[in-house]
Length: 579
Image (cartoon, rainbow, N blue to C red; front, side, top):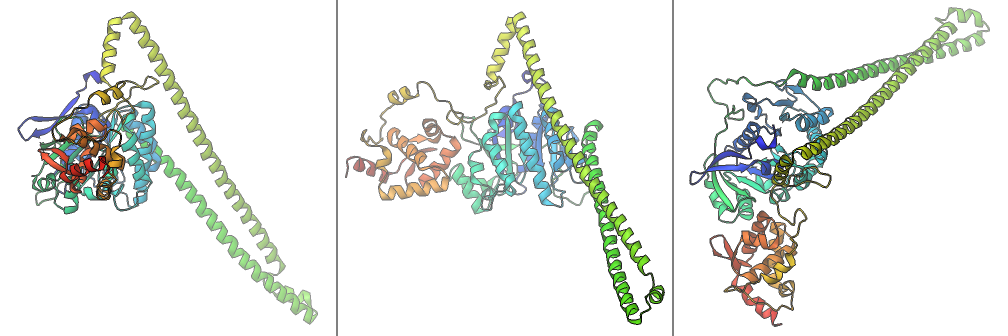
């Protein structure tokens, strides 16, 4: 399906005034999202609704299912359900990671990665880590819009505990994946337990009902203090939606119910009827099954050889004990023969004698030779595995080379077609402009949301604009042009409050000084206007403004409008005058 024929907006619910809520597909696929709400508030339903709409529009995605509740999507959509349970289409392990990423990105196969059935949590963690790394690496070349959905994200990137290798990789994707087309959405019922770096970097957030104080405080810091109380009164399916790509900061939304089977619903007294689910192609499962069977055969053979080697080793130890006993008997016989001066008679009366000793030596030699053969067999098998891995790497390199040649040939074909049909060339240029530009090598780069500073762009007339767009507004504080605002903020009580606000919002002191300077120069402003002036994310600016207001440096001047607190306005002219 071509990009032009795919829908660009998806419908997920209704606003408070009854209007349809439509979300842009590209921003969802490549952005950074966070969906939260207490159990039963509708957060998993919201994630399923978004997944249904993306699948309906023909876009693949990968869902990390920690509770086994997303397989209901297979009621309407062909998805690969992979995990450890027998109910899955295929049982997989970390060795399948590269093939899973290839299926999802290159063959457009939607995947439910069900990690709920793994008895060993380390295996599940390693599987997710390897698949996420393969997605990140492959997207550097493909630059294809793709969404990674992670349930119970606080288990991987906790706020209080240490973040492991998998969590660091998910944070890396949230920071750098968008420019390659790889988006991520984290889902959690406890926002206070999720690392704040992940939440503040999100460019679309969905807040369902929350009641715990620690969780509602997070809402107050990220949105505004008034929402910390409002969020506890939301009904099931209702949420406050906050996005970077709309003029309206926060909207109250009623999300629709998902169409597919609700596998996560609390069991009741009625009979449980599992719906008929769509299955993926046998060839697809067969490729993955081949990997599993080959790995199992190799492991079984290694186990068999190790068991046989252990058995031979035990036999050698037994024979060595027998040999030692025989030597003791032989020695005692010789001593007795010497004493009696009748060596031949005594030796002939002893059981076995030197013949048993010789036989034991021969059997030990044979067993040691067999052991050496087994060890050589294991070494040869290791060499064979290493050789096969080298062949696999060579084939992967050959595939990459053929793909590059294919891309070059397609480019030549496109150039020839453009020469023959100039009008279509103009149309293609228009579509390219809509898709967000290209990388230096011509690959399309998707950049959804964000701002100019984040992507490294600065308007050519930025300096001129900053020099000419200064407007004196009523109630604004005029400072000495020769003194920088950070110098004027170095009074002890202001400095301490700025430090507390920065710590609470996890923003830098430089950002706080820049924002206070905007309020000092331009007077009462909405956070949208402040974010535009300092070239920062609206979510990050709102979080810092809320903390500055809590610290008494800002005050509310109107609905969603803030200004310097009276004490600060009085302090700045005095500091400017050198008092």
